[in-house]
Image 1 (cartoon, rainbow, N blue to C red):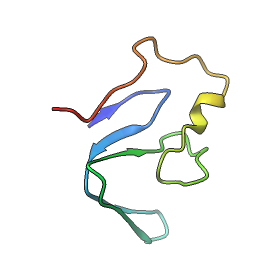
Image 2: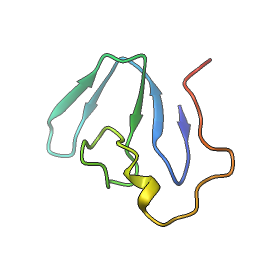
Image 3: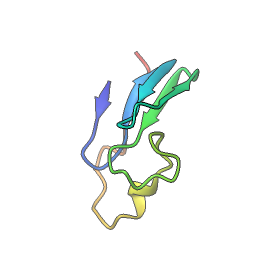
Length: 67
């Protein structure tokens, strides 16, 4: 996993995520981006809403799930 303060948490998939209310959501993708800012309209999946938050972006530009 790779975590950045201003971006999503990248996780190698497939994954099952249990939400606070007990709901389980699944993704069968090889890499998923989990929202850490809670601005995403597709929460818990990241939709890049963090980019419009006004916070400065990380200079390295991101990360990948490549091993």
